[in-house]
Image (tube, rainbow over all chains, first blue to last red; front, side):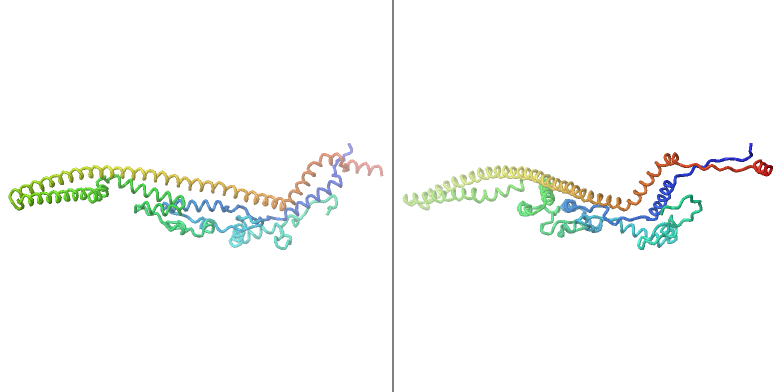
Length: 144
Length: 254
């Protein structure tokens, strides 16, 4: 008995450690993108034939002195998008909801935004993943 | 929307009948046949149905309490004027001719104005009066029977027409309803096509904005499969930590 101790430590190959670190860096960058709203149409508008059908229903009711209803009082005018597609987008409702959050809970909204890049300027967020402190020991140089 | 598609439609309120129709069904009044025939050519199927139903209901409603007596005058008055009175005029003319003949005979017999002449004249007029009364009674009985039958036939015809009108109204309503349903079905197909285009575009957009995340997944998958091979290729570093005995051996050998 010599009184000493012997240990064996496995090391990752350098190429793999580089790939791993690259992957983590990429993940951090991707995670900073944040939410990308969709500003296109979500729901197709009523077709002209459907509107004609609504008119027919009104004519049916009116002929028998029953109440009628104007569909345009229920749904707003649809927006015409590319290729002449008419529909409705949820983007205005989304913007309104985000604005309401900024008005009522500005701190919480700013904190959420701080995890991601500025959606207008692209400036890094104060708390985005790549800005987090690193305390572990790196055994190989980061690949990027 | 509907208002834009048909600007002449009066929206809201109690009626949305297009203005160009120029007719508003009135359930309080019984539409006449001429009114119906004139209006029906330019009305939509629902207005035709409404008007036909109102007309049929009105006529059938009248039939619940009406009798043939009310329509008999339509036949009796002309009959009285054109048949009975004409027959009585004929009898009167014959009576006048008969009296002329009696007067002439009395004059030839130099008995004009005498008692015999008076008796003969009275008897002659009596016969013509009786003939006139019999003729009038017979003709009026025939006229009453004819007028009653004609009025009853009119009632039956009108009630039958009312039933047919109600059927036509139902038919018009079904035409309109079927067309309306067809418009709804075809319109839904058109809307589905637009929705499919929107969904396709939305899918492409999600593919674009999700491209970085998808790329990351590819990297993660590659890295997740590597450890086993990486472990095999991994180098080993042996570390020896000397103990107290080792230090004593070193000290003793010195």
